[in-house]
Amino acid sequence: MKFDWKDFIALAETLYHQANHLGQEEACLRSAISRAYYGAYGLAREVARRKGVPLSGTPQDHAVVTRHFRRAPEPLFRKVGLELGRLRRMRNQADYDDHFPRVEKETLLALKRARQIQKVLSHPEQGETSP
Image (cartoon, rainbow, N blue to C red):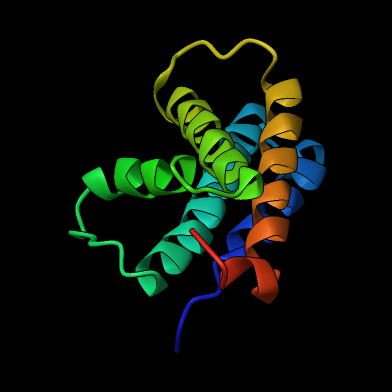
């Protein structure tokens, strides 16, 4: 069964909304950022793969997918690449930095970016023209 990457975005939203109730609030918020990124990245990677972008199955694919979208002729797809890059930097901060100021605000921004990417990539008429 094929995984639906949108489920990570939905999980990220749940983690954000339930962070106070689950305990370990900062861990929930950081995890939400991480899941938001991986959900958006998974959706973008699927589109890139369908378009014939050569992927290696290595961590370098993150940059390859982002670059693919950033170089697309359509402004919406270039924005996907830009937002995916920003989201990855947020994910790295959430996963690796000991101090993460404004984590709640950053989580909201990460969720917004992931939903924007999902929206653009979920429209078949857009997803099939380019990138």
